[in-house]
Length: 156
Image (cartoon, rainbow, N blue to C red; front, side):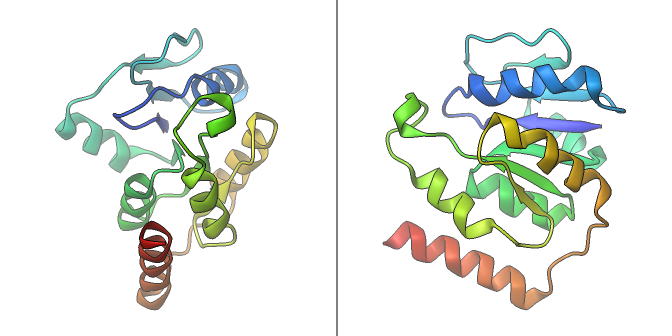
């Protein structure tokens, strides 16, 4: 199963719509937590919000996670040893107040188990890599570098 999450604070219809378009072409089911957005998926199961315990169960059973570039989701995917595809919300498209998610995504490029889709057109390729490249968890030193990079960005 592929689990899509946009977090709990803001809608992200661009990501939800792109995954809904991909869902019929995938060889496994897709479930999306779509938040308060206006787009309602036609090709994947979804809920606006998911209780925490149910969400944890979904993530644990996921083959891959597709998400906004939220640091909490990235760190959780790493903790669960799940590949994660991230696509940043963009301020210019009214998806966030600034481009901090773009900066977060840029810092994650090349990290083990993290695949960055710059936009909707790159989503299919990033997801394909997440599902086919064997997942090798980061070493503790790599996780520390990811956490340090996130802390540095947030402090800066």
